Image 1 (tube, rainbow, N blue to C red):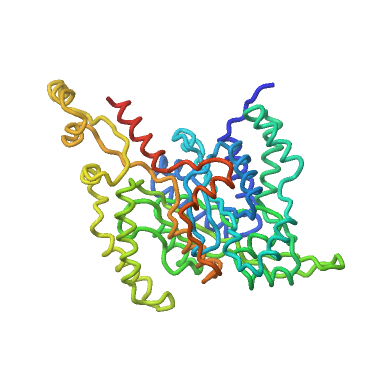
Image 2: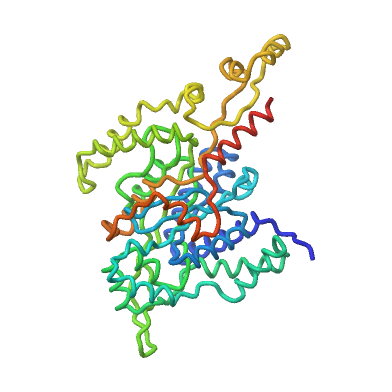
Length: 444
């Protein structure tokens, strides 16, 4: 038996199948993918090709058992859990992001999946029994998929025929069914308890609620949507005037019809709103030091906002305020970012004019060669997520204000999550550190 199908190919096939479903079921997705293609083609053929391979999606699970199985499924797609995001103060979930952790594999297919788990601690104690009863009804993973997971783990991959069955089963898992798992009355009760819980538990699936293409310019995509008469979130999210971390923007997709079961076996059909359109623009990765400074400036900017989102002048006020707040960060001076240890890099040898100059450069230290320009600094691309942008987009799209009934904080939050996950998450800073160290070693 020959294991012939690379994980990156399985990843790409699942994403393609779900994207085709979105395009066929929601015409707005066809329009938005056209916007992405136009922006990326304008950035040049090589950039368009690179950006076309980078997408992300999001799912939400309800229990540690579901989380562990998701981890096993994503491992067979070549993805590891990277970073821990405690978003419970805003949206009643804590999360990780599954993605490839090999730069070459990201180049082949850069899909990553942001996976959140409902925190029962965010549910009022009096309501937990009802919520847990609904959680126990969920049966997400078909016997065929469970068997394929075992086979893939034993063989360390799949044959061609096995991979197609795995792709088909995963595609079904990640597409929302037309029938709800709960009755309309139960769904309405869940909404009064916790709106995030209502969305996690409405169907027996791990449906992608968006599938996000990476574009060369989020501000451009934001304007394009507005010019097409599409209602976007009030402002695009992320750094204004600085090319670091990540920018995102989004708008709602039209509601779908969802059938809620009645006790007599009949159904009541209702509009259901969850899916949205999102664009991302991936920028330069920052070190711990750089990230801390940037987030301090970002928070200061948010604190200086004087207008409400409903104000007609809000967008201009927001962009001006945030750009002024972030101005001290020297992202346009790569040498200064390197000197201060603010940004992650890879290194390339610059073309030298003659042999004598090359000989002199070779005798200099690595640091001296960077300072002289003999070694060129190339910022690493940020491959992960930005919590404030994610929660703001979540709230704007779904209308989830004050969704957490309990504000949860714990010094052991990451360790507790890793116990539920069944493994440690990859620290994103270790990932970028390793790439920078390997690049330096290779050049030396």
